Length: 177
Length: 95
Image 1 (cartoon, rainbow over the protein chains, first blue to last red):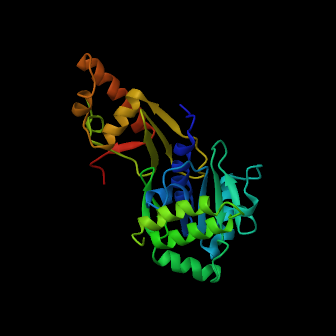
Image 2 (cartoon, chains in turn blue, purple):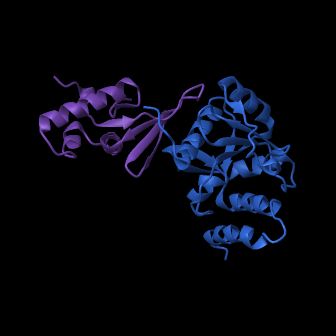
Image 3 (cartoon, rainbow over the protein chains, first blue to last red):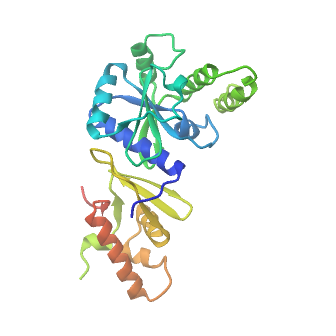
């Protein structure tokens, strides 16, 4: 029977779907934030509604073409975080699936050129297991930096304490308290 | 007569992604174009799936349930036959 998915189930499975889809064309990708960060102890287990993928900048066009070929649809819903998506990422949905899949070419705040930054992250990448599949992810220390950049980017007046709390948790998990 | 494919143990096919939360399993087969919707296994199906993933044989699976052993066995064989036919599991000894 077709399942009514909980968001947690769907998000975990969608990581595996996206990882396998990109692997079919040998497109290097790293999965960041969300359940990957939880798996690495960098976040506590809050609900995540999307799959964040940092793609090899040299293959972003191939990745976009691939997901179009598969029939995934460009996401333009009202819940799209324009600041998060902006010019550096493209959001897709798999028809019938609740999570959005955000394909990032880079992350704002990385000062190295995107290809160099990706190569550095890829060289140290790790595998986490989600939905009983291998999911490539940045090394925990690198992942912390990505989480920090994301948190700092979205800071607004009065939100500093809220934004810093998860980072403190992540920092503590790295044993660098 | 039961064939080897029906007596186990089996392995979850490497193309299947699955999660087990509470008393249900939700799974999806990973194959192009990657647009398949997940399948849900509730209660008995979820128990069987998890036990299969742990490498239990048919005889071991039967011990997970109460009731007439022959009837339980037939039900399990039906389940296994179904998921084998869908390519969701395969014999553990295949290479």
